[in-house]
Image (cartoon, rainbow, N blue to C red; front, top):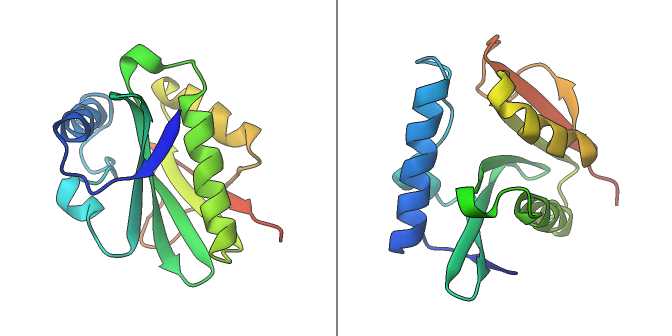
Length: 153
């Protein structure tokens, strides 16, 4: 598996992100969808990666800088054909390592509170993320789970 920084212009990633947004809108009530579209993912404070096996897109993830010491994980998604094969774990490990290299002391994320998001929450728990209240511009929302990981040097 190769993880590459991505410029969000390839047809495979555009299709995966479209699927991701559509799925979030299908299973999450309006006003509680916090997934970013392509244009918002291209913001200068967001680094976006894709995971590949040869020419086969496996998944994606992003790191948004909140301030010089903290970041937020965004747009974690594995393609349907490659779920339960460790893709999300490898992407998350990569993002955590980059956050450490940047000198971040905290990583945050928001994910859904519904049963469909249980695998995502379990993944983050395995990597030491703990539940907390809203952060940054988020507000308290019963449809969201907010998590944080303290990064040690």
